[in-house]
Image 1 (spheres, helix red, strand yellow):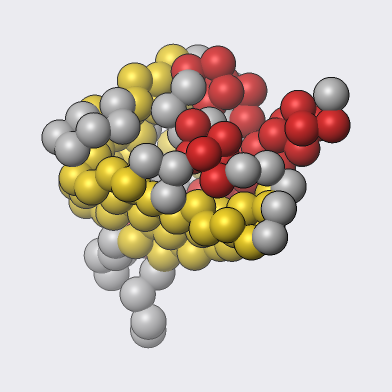
Image 2 (cartoon, rainbow, N blue to C red; image 1 turned 120 degrees about the vertical axis):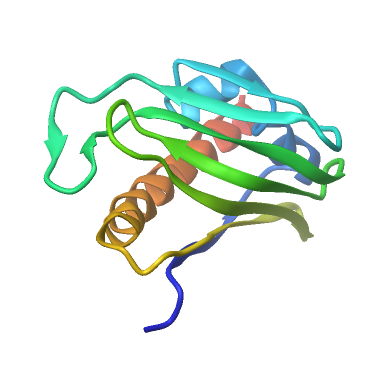
Length: 156
């Protein structure tokens, strides 16, 4: 079986610097990623931590969803890309999932930005498989919210 992960690209009608900034602005993250708290520092060795409220429901494998995703920013090219290592998802209950790596790229595509988001890491375990089954569609939905938010701001 090939390693599991998440890899998605979306085009957003906004400048790369604005798309990049949305990953480091607490108000923006609360809006598009629907987190309740975040500390994201766009510097090498900076913290990248995002927290969500626990869900009222339980997944049969992972338990309640929500919790904290955290890692350490290792590389930053402002307005262009960042890489977060040692990423772990700490659920409200149960064992963490990790380590993983998060890579975000923002490339100019005419008057738009081609945003790439990749989350990689894998162990041959049911929890990892289920994690990506849930995170993949959820992150795509969040990136669509980011697109709508930035494009609406652009139109205003």
